[in-house]
Length: 91
Image 1 (tube, helix red, strand yellow):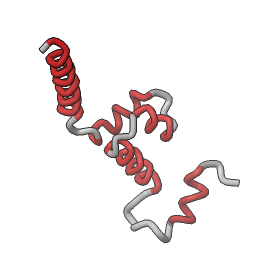
Image 2: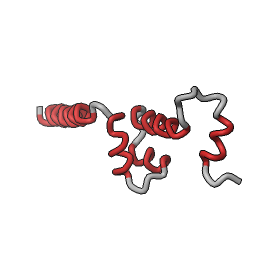
Image 3: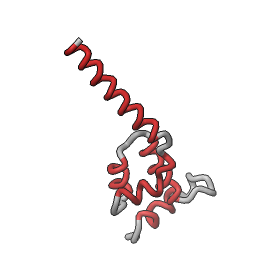
């Protein structure tokens, strides 16, 4: 019985992976894809087995470009919705 996942899967995948891609690279690709696809960082962190979500965010925050812009857009949309509701109620 292998001691690690890598010991079990690397021999099985060795012939299917391009020569310069390591098994660990697949882990990084998976993490990056999760975050870039909008999966919550807590879920990604749990899937990766990180002890703290901060580890995931420190390592993979590059996969979340536009976080500030997204936050600003969401706050703006919420404020606009509140203003529109207020206008209907008191207008």
